[in-house]
Length: 435
View 1 (cartoon, helix red, strand yellow):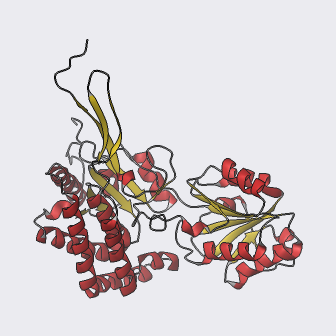
View 2 (spheres, rainbow, N blue to C red; view 1 turned 180 degrees about the horizontal axis):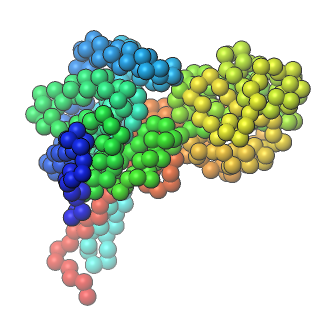
């Protein structure tokens, strides 16, 4: 491309100019690496398996760096849900390494023929999968994303530029240093994966406007971060949305099962985007069952936000009066919004008004209800009689995921390897000219 972002630093402070120069220099190097001869599937898998082994071997080094981030986060007063996202232990490091091993076991999408044909004049036409190229990642807190992005990028033939958050600086630095050591040991450039500066938010803007150097940028984090990237990017961006996920309990539901599913979706890990944030309860259910659902949540330590008068009539106390903000809220905490609705049509109407397009779930035994819900809810994932917690690339069989797309172009839902490729057309002839 001819519209590479210029590297002018006029009017910038010395520190800011240095930061911008570093981002563009690393993007330039990533572009160079992306144009090297591609790795074979065997080479990719060997690299990923080696990285998994070395990460486990150097767990102590990773945890020491992570402890520095956690201590700094607590000193700054970070919410405990963010501390949870940030925290690593030996089991989580093993899980991160396991994600790389799973990706190594997955089919390599690069070179797959999406479709093809033989034209009447003998021309052979193929549409094949190819890497996107230089893949920018902007993400918050979670150090596991650093390794997930590396693994998925390598297997799909891309070169990752990672812009993590300042809160995970030490963890990410340690992880990327280890991954670079593994690349170097395999005879690859250390720039096969790079960590961008995160001292100021301006480095995000440098990345997402580096046209001609960066092919795609993927934000992963809270609504503010995602909106800033999607609206500010001049390179193509994939929106990975926030998760205001709803769970509707129909009058036909197996209430015991529904309670189990709501609790799982809310309590299993409340700080993730597939956590259930709103429970909608059919007015047709007996009051005793409505109360059972709500008190089960409270017994699990969840604070309910709803209409105090409405829920008090069910003898449910301790309710926080809901405002319109609650229906739009991605709490990422032990809080949930609750509302009584008049059947599946009203539930879908509420969801349509407030959904972020991530994951929506229904509990019902009436197939007419589940069919209506399935066909009328517009979301990346619709769950029928199961938990919202299942919306996850690993649970979908993708190994690690790069994010969950809530947009409708190119990719939607958990994004695995195929979603990190584009296609190109190849036409093979033997001298045919067009009349």
